[in-house]
Every structure is written in structure tokens, then in C-alpha cells.
Image 1 (cartoon, rainbow, N blue to C red):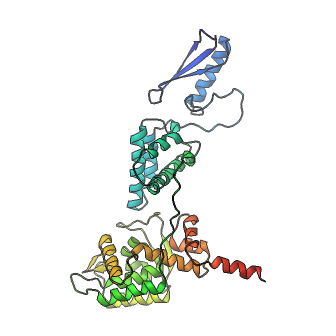
Image 2: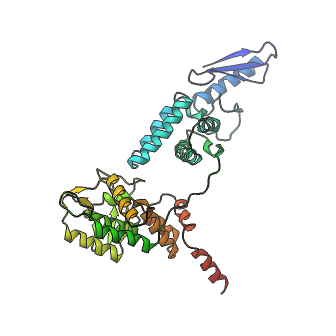
Image 3: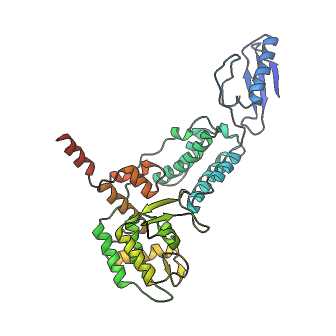
Length: 367
């Protein structure tokens, strides 16, 4: 497996490993001994460590015989093989989320070479690739964020020993806070849409005012609302389920149940009684589900005409989460309601909400 030779200049025995998938293909490791019997014992020990995946001569210092400390096994998988495992583990995610992981990791593999061992991937590889991209700093940070998910998957599964993305240097970008509108501004657009919507059998935008109001009441993402089925609305308990179906997968791949306000229940009841569903979806036009791009364009058109051009389907979600934080709902509760995988995402809204924390702290200190 490894060749043992003696350096004629120093007299020290050297062990040479060979792997055509590594760079360089041949790796020489000095034994530090001049005695042939000691060198042979080291050769057998190092070969066993290498064969059993506990030591990589290309990336790790030589193990010491008799060292009882547990060493992390080194994966011999290639980058392409590790990426394939990662993408399989993310197959349950929403199509756009999966596509982002697929695209960004694919770009890195094309740059560094997918046949390299995953254990040889270093922060400098990511740094050189990201520095060579002609994109905005915020886009670079977004790409590194997707790669971080891949790298942490590899670390958690024993394919990498550390999160190398922690050592990648990025240009500092201004912090981006979620956009939020006040309730009266959202209602202004909903009222305009209700008054000016087209309501016909083939083409109808009568759904738009309901979409705006329900989006601001539930914090559902655009597609979570558009793919909501009537069977997932429970009028008796006042809840709805954001469920994964054959035609829709949530962003995280997980389902959640959220409570409905009295206003939302009234709206849904009115929608169900006023226009029976032909498709089973809560939101439809002409008996068919509403295309997501059509939804965004329609909401934007009414928002611009109502004098609130910044309102979009996702701004409705931001606004609802912000209102909940402002009204003192605990952040973990808001996290579950919004379907955030990481509470840090929910915490960003604390900076957008009015300074309710300051009021609470002042009240507590004055007692």
C-alpha cells in the first residue's frame, strides 16, 4: 500500500503513499527514524491507520503509536459523492430551496474538481472561488450561506473535521432588515383591490383582497397560501394546517398547524360560501389554481395603484411577524407560528418592531 525508502542525504526512512485522486498523487511522509526495523513497524502502523480511515497522510500529521486518544475517521468519499448524499438529504425541501443548494454546490465542485476527496476541501478553496465571482457582496454572502449548510452536513456526518466556511472572509455588508407595513396601510391596499378587482367567470381577481388580508393575518408564504386546500382548514377548532402535498412542499419540508383569528375565520367562511371551489384550493381563479407569478403581479399592480408600491406577498408575511413581536408575543411562539427553522431568523424582526423591549425593561427597573 505504501513504499518504504531511505533518504540517501539524511539516512531517514520515508514512507510514500499514492492516490491518483489526491493532489499531489504521491505523498512522502518522513518516519523520523534511521533504523530499518523501527521504520518497518511505523510503516505497518501507518498503513493500518490509513486503510481503516483514521488518518489521511495528505491532510493530517502522522499518528503516534500508543496514542490512545480517539481519532476522527477520515472519509475517502469524493466531493461529488458527498454532494450527492447532501442533496439526497435535502430532497424533501421546497423546489426553490433544493435548486439553490444544487446550483451553488455544483458551481464549487466545477471550480475545485469533484473527484477530490471531501477531506481535502479547505477554506482557501472556497475563498478563492468566492473572491473570483463578479457578484455583489450580499450575493457572495448568500452563496457562502448555502455552502455552509453543505459543509455542516459533511461535518455532522463525519466527512469533514470542521466547518471550513467559518474561516472564509467576506466583505461586510449593511444589515438587511425585513420590510414591514402598518396594519392600516395593508388594509388600504386590500380595500382598493376589493373595490377595483375584476370578477368574471374566466378571469377574476376577486381573490386578491382576501389574499392580502389573510396573508397579513397568518404570515403564510405566498405558495403556502396559494396551495392551501379547503380540507386543511378546520373551522371547528379555528386552525389551518400548512401541509405538504403531491404538488407542494413547504420550505423546510415540515408541516405546521397555526391558529386563525376571528377575522380570518370570517373571511374563509365568506369565501367558501360565496364561490364554491372547483379545484379544492382556497384561492382560485376561473376554477383553476392561481399561478404564483400571476399572484405576485396582481398584488403588486393593486399595491402600486393604491399608492403602496412596496407591498408584495412576502411583505405581508414580514408585517404580520413584526406586529406579533410588537404586541409582546414571545419569540419562540412567533418562530413556530412563522415556520422558521432557526430562531435567529425570528430575532431579526425584533429590530424592525417598535422598541417594545425598551418599554418592558424600563417598566421592570422602575418597580
